[in-house]
Length: 255
Ligand code: PEP
Image (cartoon, rainbow, N blue to C red; front, side, top):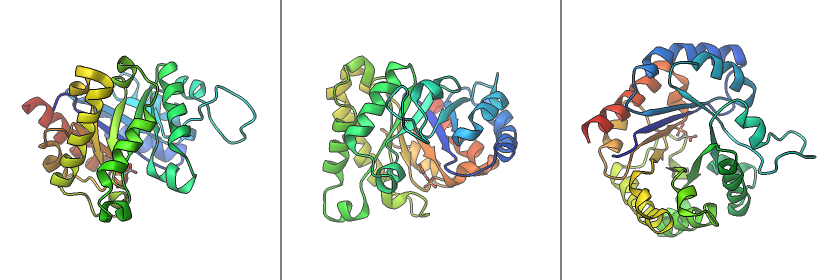
């Protein structure tokens, strides 16, 4: 493990007051874990308040989405420039955006370019559905999403992306991938990234996401190509997310 990294995705949960309460509940625990990059992604409405709650703690804040255009007639959307006012990270390509909101590889690629152009770090998500896995197409699907999502970036730009492998069948289901399955997929992604980012691929953060919890995180980060996790449900509990982050930091220190 070369780049311990853990991120919380609070999805469409929490009012501003609730989000600040949760941030305060995890602030001290996360602040102590200096060996890992720690990022919390609240809903847009709570970004400013959560950023303020984490100020001075070393914990980064991220948005869960952004529009690729800088501004314009896109009612209800939020641009990267708006996001950058408030935080340094942004999740792009989450399977819920792909599946529920029809986001294509091309649209996600435009977001990645826009985010990097603004100095934001994209947490770029990809992963196969159960149907694709059962058809033996998992590796090909992930490769395609990676290649198309990062298309047109030079190696230095690719190296500034955090990649999250999130098999769709494992997200929010309580049915995590096995560490073997995740390692196989993520080893393949690391090899692909070697072609896109040259030697820098070795130190890029590769995150596993999908029903991570305090009991299973150690088995994931023990794998060679798993540097940390993107955490949904368990990140809504301060004690659970701090425990997951501690395991990520500990695995990083041991490697
Ligand atoms: C996610 O939404 O990115 C995620 C991994 O969710 P969960 O941890 O709940 O499976």
